[in-house]
Amino acid sequence: MSEWLVTWARTHAPALAGGLLVVVDRAGAITAHVLPTLAAACQYADDVVAELDPPDTTAVVLDAAYVVVHRGAHYAARRGGPPSRG
Image (cartoon, rainbow, N blue to C red; front, side, top):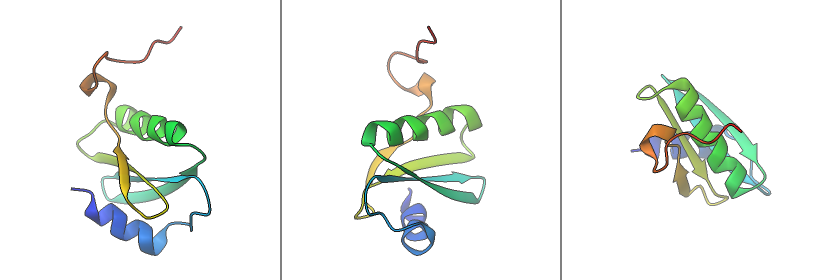
């Protein structure tokens, strides 16, 4: 499902000395973002998918070995619905 993003990350993304890599594919435009913690990376991936609206958007979190450790999910798809805003 997200193998192309792992392949892209191995050849185009910044080297990971620490942190995790969030790779985003928005209708073919791929970007990468390094975040310091798993919680921050997962939140970012979820936010991107929720704000940019699938199915044209995919976000995955990769560890230093380029293993997918999280797939971004829209808030409505997760148990509990959207996060509380206050």
